[in-house]
Length: 133
Image (cartoon, rainbow, N blue to C red; front, side, top):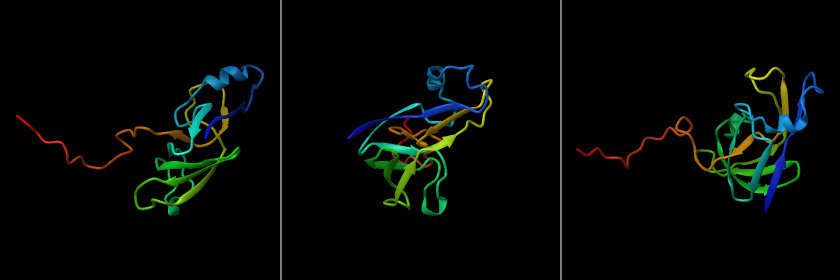
């Protein structure tokens, strides 16, 4: 099943100065986008620490099991905690950087699709590369 999950955006002050349509277009660093396109079986990455003792940390890769209206059900894809389940709710997120003249508050699932992982998230050594001269 495919689902489009939209965030609930608001401002902590001066709410009437900026239209909601404008707020929906913003994607500050560390904040998920306004629209998340998810489907069962898709790889996702958690953007916040939920329970480090169970392996649910920022940057952990998951596979979506089920999509509900208020919860995303997922399982850890690899590593020492592979197979652990998690229920991910929508949570209020506020960017730590002050890049705008207002404080954006976005209620969204703290995850993003991860079809590729950046080099700072994958720290495994490459053994398949050989030097040739």
